[in-house]
Image (cartoon, rainbow, N blue to C red; front, side, top):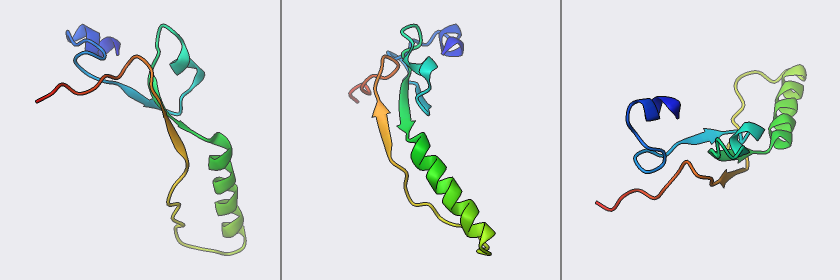
Length: 83
């Protein structure tokens, strides 16, 4: 966000910024970063399942269709301007 400000852009008036993982830093008032929150527990369970499948002899990639996510809106996003 500092680079955007250095380029003369205002967050979120000119550009919206969204992070991934919703870390504790994202929630700090001075950052207040809109983030996509993922369940670390669900991610870990899927990873363990994949490792166990491999240990049982499964080969080839395994597709994981979807993990639950939540958009946590904070002060770094705004609606797009009307055309």
